[in-house]
Image: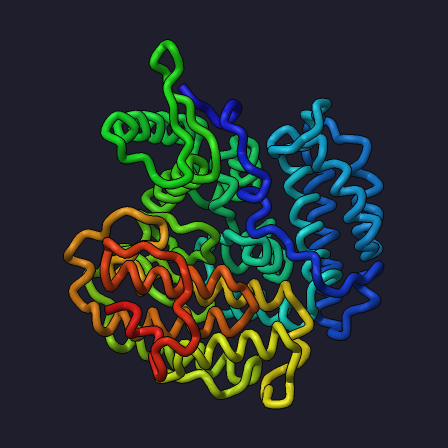
Length: 455
């Protein structure tokens, strides 16, 4: 039987989307920030996390004290170097050195991780867009809700900028990526266990067991998902590893939280697709809401509100040029000209955004996650597999919104892989037997919109 102790969690599933490492670096975060309110909130956050760490009962690692001392000064470089050294010895991450330190888990380690993430996005990324990302998400979520932050910015920025993450004020922050790690569940229970239901060790073990049994059945019937590492040993025991397995277990634990906390509203910032959620999801500003009941169809009001929200939100960032009828060629040309050639002669957006790779990736990811809702309802699920037919009855409408959302996501960052995946997914939506990932020549179909690749 697999457990959270013998299933090694890939580091990027705990840390969300890996950092791009292409933005500015400030040695002292607090003195470099322009907004006094942001500085005050970050200082308060670091102090709160330091207090939380000091109240932990497990023995502290020797590196904790210098890390917290640097963090309280806003000394990003010193804190970052200390964190990277500690992470090499944390047993829960792939790539750890042979000599691991068992003290690098629990509330103290979680406090270190969350401080480091906050300092990264304000010391390494762009202050303006990190603050907008966090504050706009926070303002959209009702009090007493439960929010899942999957990517690094989705977890760390929101954790740092809400009034009090430790007290769940105004809402409770969890990360779906770490639920398969028993030490993270211990930490979550220490924070919120007296306020909301957090999966017990028994819940966790059941999710591991259920996944293993399901994987074993699918292995026998040749239905293993792409990237899912499943095998049986000489004794017939199932062996699983890798991100697909971890995220499947995480998805089951999210469902436990969802099913038990019936008085809370739920919101999610997606890292990897969680298949069970799609019938329950609807766009909610920058993120997504998880409704209590599945919906066979998204209303026209929901679709139009999402369309209008993102059109208005992105106009000052990339300019007011991207519309429903913008062609594939125009999207590709904008990306290559703006991000590739740095030709800004026709650019009407914010040049500051173009200088921050982190900002580009975080907002592009938000938009592509919402596009995934429409793609799923079109019958092309982001995580693979099949969509029950009762959810795919509005294909034309879903195609238009998926097309528009994907175009916006791609216009936010230069990611050739995203363009290839985008066009490939439309080819699969048009004809499931065609799975080429090659991008059509730019001039092969003049005036073609991305929607044409769906059908």
